[in-house]
Every structure is written in C-alpha cells, then in structure tokens.
Length: 323
Length: 310
Image (cartoon, rainbow over all chains, first blue to last red; front, top):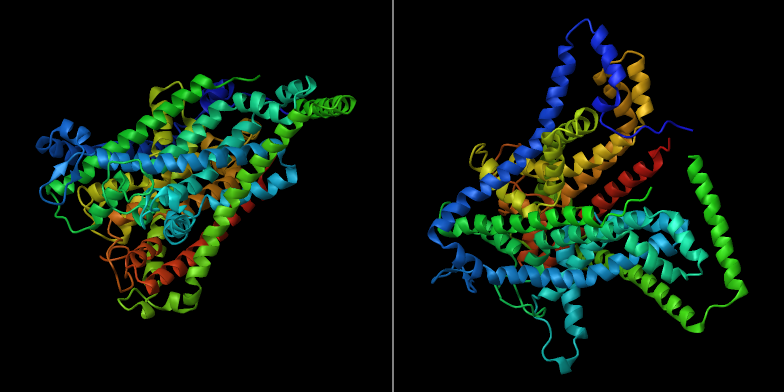
C-alpha cells in the first residue's frame, strides 16, 4: 500500500514543510534561491528559442513582403524565384507538400493504426514485449536512409509494378515513392503513441463488452477505438506535422520541380525541399531570392504551429476522463 | 496496488465468462469470418511495417556491400569515388555531437527539474513554458536550420560556418526531447521519497540532488541517448548552417571553418548520381544505422532494465 498523493508541484504539496522551514530557517538560503533561479533560467531558454525562431523568420520575411505582395505570394500559381522572369506564387510548393503528405498518410494511418490495434488488443504480452522495442528502435532511423530507400528501392519497384494499361509509370523522381517512404517513417510514431492511448483504456470497458457477448473485433472497433480516439488523433496529427516538415526524403526522391498537382507520379517540390535546395545553393545574402527562404519558412512554421495547436484542442475536446 | 489486483481478477472472471458463453452458443458464421478477416488485416499491417523497415536495411546493405571495409573510416571526402570515405565526416559528427551534449544536457535537465520540482502551475508563465516546449517539439527541423543561419551563423552570434554553429542548432532542436523525457523520469519518482528527505531536514535542492535525480537517472539517460541519436541522424538543419559544403579535410576544432557530418556527407555523395558514389552513400548509411540502432537499443534496454515499480 502506498500513499496516493496527487502529483502536484512541490510548492503546492508541502504547506506544512514550508511553514516549518519558515519558522526555523536561520539563514536566507541564498544558495537554494540561486539554484532555483538558474533552473528557472534553463526553462526560460525554451521560450527564448521560440522568440528567436519567430524573430529570425519575421525580419527577412517582412522585408520580402515589402517587395512581393502577400496576395501574390499566397495565391500565385507560378513559383520560380531563382529563374528570370521571377514569380513568387507559393501554391505549387504548397501543393507539393500536400501531395507527399497525403500519400504518406494514406500509407501510414492504416499501417500504423493497424499495428497499434494488434499490439494492444491481439498480441500476447510476450509478442508485444518483443515487437514494441523494435518499432521504437526503428523510429530512430535517420531520414537520409529513408530518402535513399525511396530513390534506390521504391521508385524502381513502383516503375516495375506499374501496369501498362494505366499509362506511363512514375517519373524517376516522384511524389509517390517519397510519400510511401515518409509514411514508413511516421508509422512508428503513430503506432507507438496510439498504442499507449489504446492501452490506457480501462479494462472494465472491455470486460463489460465481452460480458455482453461482443466479439474481439467488436470490442476493438466499437469500445476501445472510440475510447482512445483523442490519443489516436494526437498521434496522427504529430505524424502529419512530421510529414509536412520532412526534408531529406523529398529532397532525395521527389525531385525539385515546383508543380501544382496532386498527381503522385510526377516530380514535385515541397516547401521544405525548396528551403533546403536554395539555402545550399550559391545565392547572395540579402537578395530577394535569399529572403524567399524565410517567407516559405514562416509559412511552414505557421502551418505546423496551427496543426499542433489544433491537436492540443482536439485532444482536450475528445478526451474521455475515466475514474 | 490492491485495485490493480482486483481488476486483474475481475478481468480473468470476465474472460472466463465470455469463453463459457462462446462455448454455449457458437456465434454466427458471418461474425466469425469478419472477426478472422479483421485480425488478419491487423496482422498484415504490422507485417508490412516491419517488412518495410527490414527492406530499408537490406537495400542499404546490398547497395553498399562493395564498399564495406576500413577505407570508409580512413579516407576523407574526395572527387574520386574510389578514394573517397567518411573520415572527415565522422570526425565532424563527433565535434558537433560533443557540443550538443555539453550544451543540451544541462539545459534540458535543468529545465525539467524546474518544471517538475519548482514551477507553480497556477502561474501563467509556467504554463506558457510548458505549452511552448510542446510546440517546439513539433517545429520542423529545417526551421531550426533557418534559426541557426539567421542567429548563430550570422546575426547576433556571428560564428560563421563552424562545427559549433551546428552544435548549437542541433542542441536547440533536441532540447524539447530531452526536457520531455527528463520530466517523465522525474515525475515517476514517488512523492514519498521527497517527503522523507524534507522531513529529515534536507533543503529542496539537497532533496533533488541526492534523492530525486539519482533515482530518475536511468530515465534521463535514456531520453538523452534517444535525443543524441536523433541529433546524429539529423541532416536538414545542418544543410543550412554550413555542413553542406564538400569538404576534403578533417575539422581542426569546433571553431574552424569548413566541416561536414556523416548524414550530410552521405547526402552529398548521393547527389553526385554516379553509381560508385551511390554505393558509397549506401555504405555510409549502413555505418550510421549500426551506430544508431546500437545506441537506441541500449537506451531502450536501459529503460526497461531500470524501470522501477513503486
């Protein structure tokens, strides 16, 4: 038997201890205070990082928008900032990001969620103990490896398997192979977080359903899945923001052609790939081309920020509180 | 604890009851077929995930096998594929990651200790820090590259394209990971341990330093290793802070211009699009995978080994 004190920060938890301290402390305890301040400073660094990100994006981006209208940037359908005549319509590379993300999710959601459901509802404890660490280890595979895999394995495979009656197959750089590789990359994230959410569903709910004669499939789909929905949604949103922000796979396997299409067979360019390519090329600091990096980066940041915010709200809204 | 035991007992009873019900009256054929198909589909999902990752490993090994050998470690970047290797990139990675460890670990653990042990959640700034860390964890890595370019390479710090700039950029990138993992480890230490120490007259910092942190250490180390292995494999932000240049010499110090790291060197060889360089890139991927899988396995083993139930 153990004491079940709520896990509150120490300052709320120990009024008695603090009162005693106040009565007896013979010294002002400068060392304690200094340490607390130093630790607080460490925590404040994270806020400074966010501020620095916003500042570093905003400065050059604003001066970019001084020269190129925001409407032209956001709704233009032609993206060629480095080739004359220049045009700065961001939609083609937004479409590229969307293209790859959609194909990635089409792969990752069924595979990741299916794996999570199997691990939590069907697997024996031994199988789960063996397989979950494997998924976790593989979550650490670097993204260059996925990019290489997409280019050297998936694309040739897709080209071979492509049935001829569907027209010509995938380009050597294509969104589909990159999408599948990104899907594979986020499967461990979705599977691992969803599995945690599924396992957190109290056993009483499953027992109730079983007692009413439900089969395992019904219990899984009608009881456990809805109860864990908030965690699963959070897992998927996290996967989406990883897919949107993924750079190396698209840089290596999807090509670098801004292309306003959702066709998975064509070569495309994403927002991240544009930043990667342009920043490593030889473009002078301070030029308009250079500042496009920051404008696109700001858009990307806003995108993932909104996604994350939505996920926090969604989780709060759909969370079912048990006990 | 006792609650858990009763639940397990109840669930055993429930399962036994359900089994008995099944034996009394078989379910309709259709229901059983659907159930079987569903189980099969879940099984297939997991099999595809594991197969995909196995293929990734095998493909890199098959493509890179001709280049396996000591040459990978003794040769530097070169315009001749047969004389090219990864020595300078591996040394660059060591410099960069050394810098990440030195900067990120104290900051991350310090922040976690503050948030778990001192922060009063009723204060808005503490809630802001918490939400902020959650948000930072979801910021795309390339955005950190832009930050590094604007603030560290140029701008206020103005370090130039040196390994230290890469270190600082990656340290900021993995900081949320370290904070979140360290917080979980610290939170898992039961309050009774703290109360015991405080009751004996220890100050708050003495309690944390001598009671809480030693118990939380395995969890913290696991989080740190996972964060470092992420930093080792991270490529995109380093492209922006100077690692992208093709370098043929070893970095001399954290402040010497001209460095590259292993994943960026792999990407560089990859973009040369000659078969010899592709094989070299694949061999580099295998080297990196061996290191990272070993590190991650150790971290997860450590976590499972020292996981304490109170």
